[in-house]
Image (cartoon, rainbow, N blue to C red; front, top):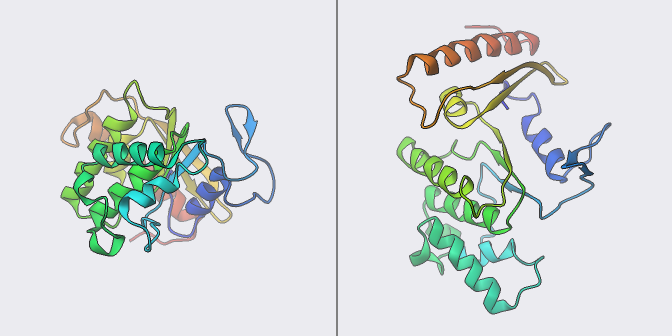
Length: 223
């Protein structure tokens, strides 16, 4: 999902996650109404949302508390997901001792450890440098799109149009207040995708045009 600031993208993600009730209508996940937080949906926040008093390993274990696992089983599974994001050597570190990229890796490990059906991502790379962000994109892609993954779909909010085209199959552009759908664009490109390809640039031009429409609806003057 792409939209100007203040359109309600994060609010919409929270509604999908069951963290906030909609004013009207309802959210359906595979035919079932989402009435509150559910293990079937995990969310990766822009600000990491780690518990500062817990270690990296313990933060991941939080996602497993709903499962009927022994303490040893929970620790073993949490450790496995930390290993997947390359943080096995930092399991006893607290968030204050980790870099931004490492904190986001812990958040990703926690989200995937819950083995959700739907993964929500609220600008997960916005606070990271370009090199770290690129590495994390590849890690998420490799972890989600494999035979063992339970994730069936990802809903992501982003302001970075190149990132959107690189990762998405479908782009929903919102505009106005309250938000409405301005455009629904399917990204029909093979993976891996490169910003240097002409087809990639064509989609970029298309999205910039649609974003201009959404800004006009939101009352934001073009510069």
